Length: 96
Image (cartoon, rainbow, N blue to C red; front, side, top):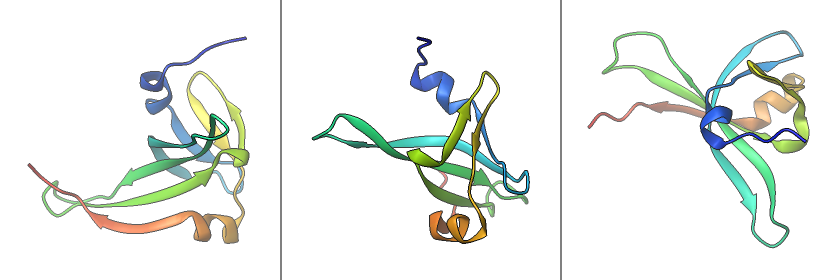
């Protein structure tokens, strides 16, 4: 069994096998504390533009949609309807 730390997981790009779209990088895990299992993870894709005005898109992807976790990427399988239901929306990037 190969183990992976969260730092490694966060560095893997998430790619949708249905169309090859690059969704972004994982930023959060949703864990069911009663079962002790991961239920979903949040992916963030930074928008283009100046850093101050940049927007980002977030997707909450069910763990069961993962097809493969490799050394360089996480492959998920989301059809168009799945992807729309996973999208949390566009959020303006906060600056400190």
